[in-house]
Image (cartoon, rainbow, N blue to C red; front, side, top):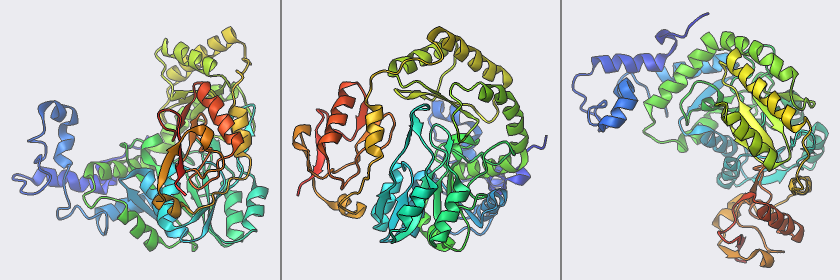
Length: 471
């Protein structure tokens, strides 16, 4: 199997060369290549402290790359087939905001499913308007269904849109029909932005879903650290096509990143692109053969396309989910999360036959004890998704909401008021209310049932107060 070497990593190669040459570092950072770091921290960080450098000669500049950083970005673009790939040391958050700043200026953005909070922040900066497509709920898988092409088409016909936005894959691994969605967007002359944060590994082998650049999306955001071998906070922003301007996106991203980017994070992005090009295909192909029996015996097969490295066990019961989480933990298996909708496990791209078999055997033993179709608790999750399936149209633009004064009122006094912050029940982690949206009595009733049922609801005050605009 080919192995990525230093020759495949232009940034790391320059950093190593500089570290080997350095005798008297009369430049920042102040830890002087690790000399002044506290002993315990230095012990854990090891030799990496020697390459935590600054923009010295030969190390290029993230904000105006012409050397090793540009070469590494070109390698990443080559792998995905993008016109340009930009490096983010401020995660997918900065990349998503930059994408919307560059495409949504004073226009309407169609969100086809639940966006990350950073998308709202992007609209604040772009002065864009959010239009949320109704969210459909799969009652068998206890998760969102893939966006409807027909619905997207009908909403876009209302006009005024500057871009369309979709999250794919979702946290539980559901993949949207990106190729068809891109065709819909392009028929209306607007770009498709894909938050593919959890799908940077897509397309490595034919059995995997194709990645969104290949599928025709105009802007694609990848969280390198989520599935690839990258350090936390690393991300890529890929651009292609004539509907977006690379220079504008690059300038927007530059505004959102520090002028002193961590070279450890840049080296991690560099190593990740080399791993993808040299080792990724063979590693993923081997792991796919280990995961195949687990996919064939999926608890709920369902329809659609899913990330094979994510295994979702839908329960519709917080009690059942927590019981499964504990049962797996007793065997040394620790999952991503367990909530009232189900249990999510995420395998590494190097998943071994041993760990897959241990997980599968333990899961099957638990299912045999519980029955393959446990009764769902009487929880308001179904009601929640019914509300999300209705039209949600904020009365104010995101930028207006950001500068509007807020106050907190008891829930019983909130009906008819305008929501001042995102109100997000967990599960499913989908905002039920966005800023600028009118609070209805039905929404308040569902929120009360969620809180009484022990659900976590972000955005409420300590005593359940609701943020509203003082107007």
